[in-house]
Length: 535
Image (tube, rainbow, N blue to C red; front, side, top):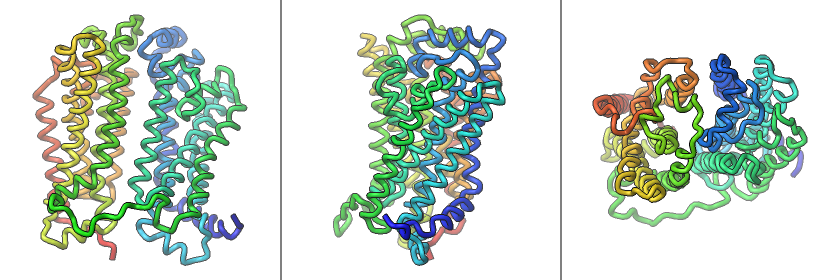
């Protein structure tokens, strides 16, 4: 590497900073907000004695399997124990998408080629994007630390926790930088990053299931707080290891970037046949071909998740010692209604349904990608109507998201039934849990379709809607809101506190109708608006 290879880095950094003047503060402040929500949750329990509440959680086999043992029995320790996974997820997603947007996405749109026409070194864009993500993560870490100090936490532990979260974000920035070097498609790079996030979460849960101190805590960034132990040991020397670990994917990215052409990937795309197969003669077949790899990846990932949790759920749910907070969420004895044997698996299906909604939304957003890259214009210039093209992708997105939940229900039902020794009864119970989540998932699909069809520039608001539903769940669990406000979320109608045999079927029918109306409005809007062109 020569100094000239980095020429223009400062100018590009200022350009990227200007382009992200709205998005960057969002993912910097969002972890702080989540930390404060977590603090509010535990502050609401202070009347019961926070230390006794955390002690009760620590003895709960179900909660310990998900979050691991409590390290510090005070408010600061509660934030670290309960909030780390959410904070790490937000910083990871923000870092990944920032890197991809300013590197691979710019190459796809031709912006990088225009930039390279000036005096710009080959490593300038990558370096500027990494600097932006790194500074964003450092700022988030400092704000997280200051917020905990404001809540009464010790300065040393607060800044150590903030630095740990910054290291997590920087690691995923490196993963994003590595992903964009491998293939020529930004969607593939995002898929690699999301897969890394999912793997990190799964490894952290396995580490927690093993007691919190297994070898996995050194490998997965989602469990790094168990190495540094803020407010419980303050092992600051571990940050040196984290910095080295986070630098590995970034260094590999620099090496690979020198071995590929602009716009290409290290792994060359496989050339297609000279003529399309007969079964690709319709927009629906093309939409399926574009979505197939993503669907298979989600099917494998979510399938492994549900199989693992279905296998361990009977033992955890029947282990006894469930905390009063968990068994009496919302002031109801829901665990008695649902049944102790179904507590863990019902929560698992509820969480996976939220992520299946993410898949449905990204599948709809494939429309925006095809349009922005000019491929939609070429198709619509032929004898393909706008409604037919968009409805093809929406059909694939809806059927694939439903197929995911059906497949998860089958896999979870089989494993859970075999684990309990009552396959004939348990299979249909677990299968019903999964299939019932289809209507709320389709609501978010409809919201995304509506935004894309009417206002494609603000489709990111769909993620705000998804996040709002997640926040409602956290606020309800913390007893900050009552159930009447929780009903805003479509997922409340298939909530894990409701026995599958008592699900309200009429509201689910109306959710299906509402999703159809939202989708129809999106199709109407797309038919009447201008199509983005590359000219």
